[in-house]
Amino acid sequence: MRAARRTVVSAVVSAACLTAVTGCTQKSAADDDAAIKVTAADAKCTTSTKSIPAGQVTLNIENTGSKATEVEILFPDDRIVSEKENIGPGTKYTLTAEVKAGSYEIACRPGMKGLGVRQKLTVTGGSVAKRDPRLDKAVAAYREYAQEQADATIPLVQKFADAVKAGDLEAAKAAFAPSRVGWERTEPVAESFGDIDPKTDTRADGLEKGQKWTGWHALEKALWQDKKIGADQKTLADELVNDLKDWQKRVGKAEITPTSMANGAKELLDEVGKNKVTGEEDRYSHTDLSDFQANVDGAQKAYELLKPVAQTKDKALTTELDKQFTALDTLLATYHDAKTSDGFVSYDKVTKDQRKELSDAVNALAEPLSKLAAAVVK
Image (cartoon, rainbow, N blue to C red; front, side, top):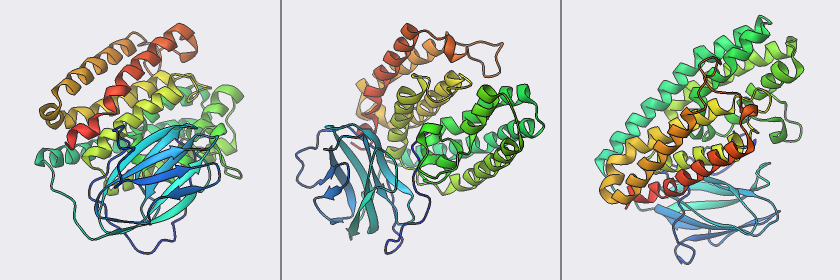
């Protein structure tokens, strides 16, 4: 789940083309003169240049404001080329992408809400270097995986919606968490479109001013807290199915590259650390561990597909990632419960110390995972 963002098409000059996207790689490039320096404040976003040659672009970001911010490189139609969320006040971060000639925007979103403050970026001439053919194979396999997850989600969410429309409270509760698994495994792909996530996966505290609350979590509150299903909830159920069918159709058009896979995996771990471990994501149903496992599954799938290349370039990194994925999977297995509809214990039964243990395991994996993108493009 991410904060809501705008859904309209940006009025930029012409369509641009992207061949290889990277996400946020924590490499040391703060003093790179070729990088675009981005200063994100509470009410403005400044960039050191408005034009660059095609190829790799690096953003050296500094948040000088008082709020956490998000910085994005955007296509003219508002799809996300690359992004970094939750850049805290006083924090610096490096964001990289490979772009071909065309028009883009760099957006800073103080508080991670609203349209953001935007600066135009023109990319001129040049070409992107060829990559290891094994990476093309990894991209193709991941694209197939993302589509499979979307396809598998539709019947599950339809089952959930049918239970809501039948007024069957207990059946709807049982179908809730399973309907989210495919989405949570591939959430970075869904988020890249910009307009689907706010309609399907926004929590009450993530709503923009005037935004109607729709999607899974609005229904979650009705089922667990309000304990009622009315006409509004039945309408929301139909809307959720329609929005997810839209996502299913668009997955094949998503921009997926080796580095977007690697950094998407890191974003999934960040999502776990920010929303799942804290219990904020599924605060009414307490099915957070199901989402937690799905995020880890998706991150691990991306890693496994990229591992053959990463292993030849940084054996120590892949050894550490294997170790930390195994440790986190083993820890999550201790919370399995075959008696529940989602296969996990209710998260409100997980103690403070246990949550700390889970958080430590996530952080231990997230640190080396942040280096994966750099490893595959060495």
